[in-house]
Image 1 (cartoon, one colour):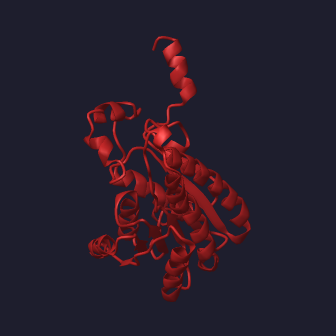
Image 2 (cartoon, one colour):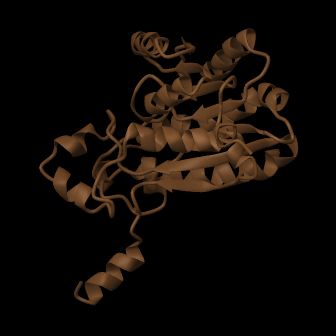
Length: 270
């Protein structure tokens, strides 16, 4: 058994949605550096093209800008990938949206926007890529779908992002449901639930006066790094995780601390 081969994704073809920035870019960078051929998408063509050009210095990375908030957008994107590839070994459903507002001011449109991208987008794109995923799958090394959830779907968030947390909890259950449905097709479906990572979505936290308090709440006392998230995605896409499906894996420095634990600690005077 060669450990290097066990964790290798060299020669595999991958799609990383929302791959032009944030966690998606971290994963795409790790994949390209590890020898995978990677397609990234994002709503903003200029940002997507710029990231693909940057990552192409490390290996193979291609920009296919797309809006995955509609079925038509997902169909168009999947069709363009299918024109270029006969097999897809790895699909990383990372594209996401968030919305924060006080409870009594929270608009119904926020739920529509967030659920369309974070939940329905994953469902539609996974379904659309099934022919390519099935074509890539083998008994020894199944095709992989890696959904990006969130610790906000595992615990009550600190912020008023009601649609986001609900959507991520739904992503975790959808992951388990799809894993059950696709196990016979040799398509493994798992999810990563990231904690705090630097991104456009979390920039306001790092820039706020409470940044130190937020980080201090993490048991490891630091935010996540690109290596943390890319390494986990590579593991979930390699032969090493071939016997793993239906799992939601927190990558969060020891978070979330459960509400029950926090309540017990306060009651004990901790």
